[in-house]
Length: 237
Image 1: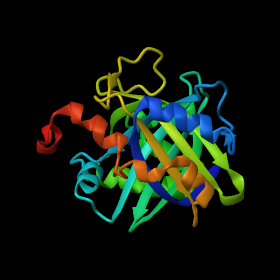
Image 2: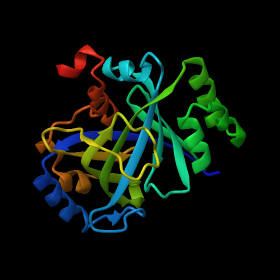
Image 3: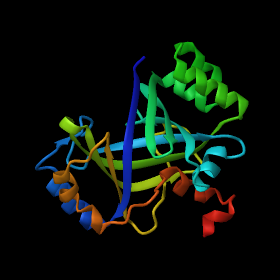
């Protein structure tokens, strides 16, 4: 089993598709494509998000809590034999992500509610997830899928992603399903630009992105997707 733990600063912006196209053209000259990219249009990301029976994660995000967590299973192809279980945390303004790779069998069992499957890996991350899932009755809530273009600059550990055609499934929560019926998440058709870095974002990359042109926003694909459940007052605001 592979484990990963990272701490980052993270900036998010909505960008028009034409602006995203121009950004990608500039980024390609100074940054490397992400290792997962196999074509000019990047690669597919599919995530299944979990939340407590009373939607604690959703409410903490909507309430702007400085300390909060998010739980998800992630794959890149419905034929994948493995999945990543990720815990993404915010502590004040610092973003961290811990992940562990598990088998497809384990992922499918967890989706069906067999949380004890997390314990077979003898991993402290998954053990903590198990305790949280059992104590707060966590359940799968929504699948989010999108196309991602990603660029990296290794000397400063900078990662720029452009997420396109973000869609969700609120009815079929089978992570490995081949033909999900997906709904568009962002009605305006905009894409999401994410800028991730450790301590410093180099000035030449900041200038290349022309960030002052965009409004930094607290964009959550999970929150945007959950509005289709129609269970909260904020969803029609």
